Length: 321
Ligand code: 8YV
Image (cartoon, rainbow, N blue to C red; front, side, top):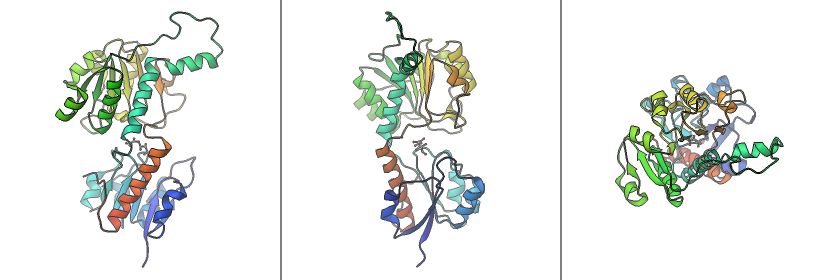
């Protein structure tokens, strides 16, 4: 019997594919310097029974229409705003994501960004790299305390909770805002549910973990930044689209807020010419929230298991709907 064909949009290590090579014929885009070109993606999708993709690939209506044999689209990410799920579902194609396995790693990175911005870690490293350390001064590169401050988490899902647990370790007060209240999180983390406005006004650290959707599009806008404290630090580890980037840039430049730590941008990748890169009070990262070797391996394996579950009949482990 002919094996099902799976196209993978990025090069992934052989040892992760090995357990599945008896079941499937794999092809993948091997060039690590460049994303898969649109025409190749379309050609491959046309032949494929399963597609394993990353958040950087847009799986839109046109691509889904092209994938006449497609039965499963497995995203190697928890967020799936890159996929037209409605169109896929209409055509009976299962869409899966990779929740849980990346929760703690992404929360670690959120906290790393929070600490890097509050304590000016990147600036301090650059200070030495530029040979500017001549004298010690009492306020040399003095930042802001983290412990005993108030953190406001927007989007209290799994990653939001994991950040709140870390905040507990720093004796922080935890506020959160979410579409629905999470009584169990309130109980075991001691998080307080507040309106979005109250969270912005009271938080020393505002952390965005909210999934991107029509509703969350640019929810961090000029008015939102104006409500924050002048000393507030904004962290974004969800999606760039939840921020009005011009408004954030203005708020940072005009010191209406103190600093920002950004792992995600409205249009990725960004380069050294991004206006955010010219600001000392902004730390930018290339979307590495879940990027530990262990976690990326788990995410890829979960995507493969989702493909296997769908194509072999047991059903996917983590479908999105
Ligand atoms: C992605 C992410 O996994 O999970 C998400 O939603 O944004 C990241 O963890 C990464 O960009 C690879 O697709």
